[in-house]
Structures are given as structure tokens and as C-alpha cells.
Length: 518
Image 1 (spheres, rainbow, N blue to C red):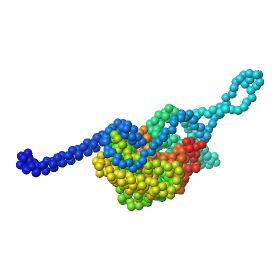
Image 2: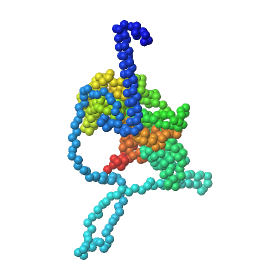
Image 3: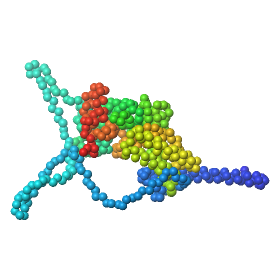
Image 4: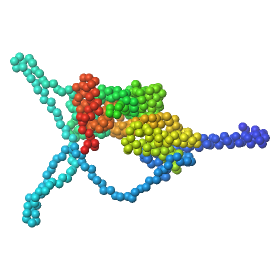
């Protein structure tokens, strides 16, 4: 409205108009303030993620670098515990005993003959030997296996010549033995040693191998393991609890994609407890169709995060129910708590979630049965969860929806049915950390080898990681298993032969790792 028209109004109209104008301007200012708060919070989060510690344990606002205010707590539903710190007592470090299953080499040490005479002139009498153990290591012993194949001929007719056949090999006409192949696989996928570094180690032993040769060996081994992986996947569908997650991987020569684009390594866990296995599966996409294809025919519950690909699987597959992860929900509040200048809503939510985890920890320490776990959760955890939901619903209206805290509240409430589903069965877990712990070794290795050159290499890596992580779960030394599997696979002629090579089916053949022995 123009200035002249304002003056043409009477006093009551002018006052009404100005009041509306002031209210409109105040609304715009509030919107701008909210937008500034969201942008400042985003900047601080980006700086925090790049430079600060990622630990979620430190959520005390007193020492934070950034001061982003969030609404104060009006009432506290989670009681804070007072911890009494005992008087400090210095502990003398105790050296652990060396594993009893390591071989011992006895080295005798004796006194010189002239020192075996006492000062009184009598000869000293031997009492005992005093052992002092010292750990020693011999670098890897490299040897050449020479297969001497005896040849026979008929001297009568000179028409028949027979030669003893060569044992079946994992890679025919290759110089690589099962032991060498197992060593290369474990070095890369268990010890995170890239192939080019292994080549350097071989070169120091005057063994000239190329990275291309080692890469081809790895891919061939991945192909050999595929029947075992297929059987493990079938076992996933025989139980009613599963696990799923995914992480990124770069593949340089992926058809119809640039070398810089992201592909994905999917992680699936499942099977009966005694037949549990991890399966890593490579796909160029993060589409929910990948998980739906893997879990086709499954009936039961799957531990996941709230990624939309899993949620669509639950919508389209009525016999599958998702158990959402409380660690993911907590993580969103933990980031906000690190930025807060004073104790606020995020700290309150974290404190209440901590009570849930405290209950879980106590039940684990007590070795409760699944039935007892369900009973305790219904009695103790359920009221806490109801209070968390009520608290978030009360605070939701006073928090900008696009702020970090607003998004954390919306995330938790929008996925509430999946977050509380772990109450239904004592076998269910409060979070999906079990799967994330499998993604960590892959991520550590990825920092060293950086990428896969081809799709075949990515598929081979997925199969090898699957077997190694399954071996770890069942307490099997990965090298021993892979060496055995690569020796026996060429002899397999039926599904039953491959069944015998599943890690948990040949567990008794191997000694546990040194860390579990003794």
C-alpha cells in the first residue's frame, strides 16, 4: 500500500494495518532467525566432523568449542548418577604369560666349571633349572613344493607310458599352492596389506611376482568360493533373524559409471546361531531392490538402520519386519549435544537412552536367558521408552524442524515402531552395531587398497571377506580355513562336498587362534 493511501485511512484502520505489518515483519524475522540457526548449526557440524573426535561419549557441553543454543530442559526425566571415585592406587603392570600352544626351544645356560666350586672348597650341587621365557619370531619361511611324478613304461612292447597324475590344484598350471593363496588372501583382507606391498615383500625374498599376477589369483579364488557363498546365503533364509547394512566402495572399471562414482558393499548376516554367517555382496547401486533380492523368501525380523531402501523392503514384503537401530538415533542427538553451550534436550534424550543400554549391559553380564531378557525389557525398558516418546512429542513443537535437533526428533518419532520392536523378543538386539562392526574391517582395508579395479575384483573381495569374517565369528583361524578350503574345493563334485567346507562344519579341524588358546 502506498504512503498516500495510509494517510487516507482513519486512525483505527491505520493502527490495524500497522499492527498487521509489524506481525508480518516479526514472522519474517523469526523465519530468518531459524534459517540462520540451521545454517550455523550445519557449518559447526561440518567443522566438527572434519576436525573433532567422533566419539559419542563426550557430550558434556562445558568443554565444547561451539556455542549453539538449544532449548533448555524444563523437567528431567532421567536421573543422573553420582559416581564416587575411589582413592587412586598405582597398579604394577603384570606381564601376560605367553600362549602355551607356542613351540618352546630350550636353550641351556650353565655356570663355568671354575664357578661351580664354593668358597669353602666343596663342589656345588645342581638343584634346578630356572626358566625365563622370551618371545622370538622367525620371518615367514618360503619354500618350493616339488611334485615328483613317477613315470612308468612297458619295456616289453614299448607302447605304454604312465605318469602319476598331479594332485588337483585350485588354479591349474599355476605356481601358487593353496598355502600361498591363503597367505595372500589373509594378508590383504584380514591384515589390510595391499597387493603391491605384498609384491614388495616377495621381492625382498628374491621372488619376482607382479601385482597383476596376484590380482588374477585373488579373482580366481573368489570364483572358487562362490558355491560356498551360495550355500551360506541359503542358510540365511532358514532362520527368522537377520542383519543388514551397506558401505561404499570405489570400482574403477564399472560399466556405465565413472571411476569416481560410488558403488556399494552390502553386508548381510543371518542363519541359526550355530550356523551364523556374514555375507558381503557387491552391487553398483544402493537401491532397495538389492536387499529385497537377497532376502527373498525370508520370514522374520531384520536389524537395520532407517535407510529408505530397507523401509521399502518392509512395505513390499509383508513377512519381513525391521528392528531399527537405537545407536543411529542416539548418534543424531550426540552430534547436537557436542555443539550445545549448555545442557538441553539432546543431553536429556541421551541420558534416557543410556538407561536403556545400561539395562542391556546388566542382562548380558548376568547371562540372562532370552525369556528373561524379554521379561526385563517389558518391566524396565518399556516405561523408559514411553517416557522418551512423550518427552520428544512435547518438545517437538518448540524446535525448528530443519535444525539438527528438529531432524533428530523427527527421525526418532517417525521410526518409533521399529525402534521399540526389540522389546518383542529376547533374541532381538537394541541396535545394529553387530553389523557395523563387520563394516569396520572392510573400511580399514579400504583406506589401504583404496579401490577395486574391476567388478570381478569387487565380487572376489566380497566372497573372501565373507569367509574371513565368518571364520572370525566362529573362532576359526582364517589362514587355516582358507588353506584347507582351497585344497579341497578342486575335489568337490557335489553339493554335499561343498557343505562339508562351510566354516562352521569344519570348525573342529582347526585349533582356535592363539588369542583364544591356552
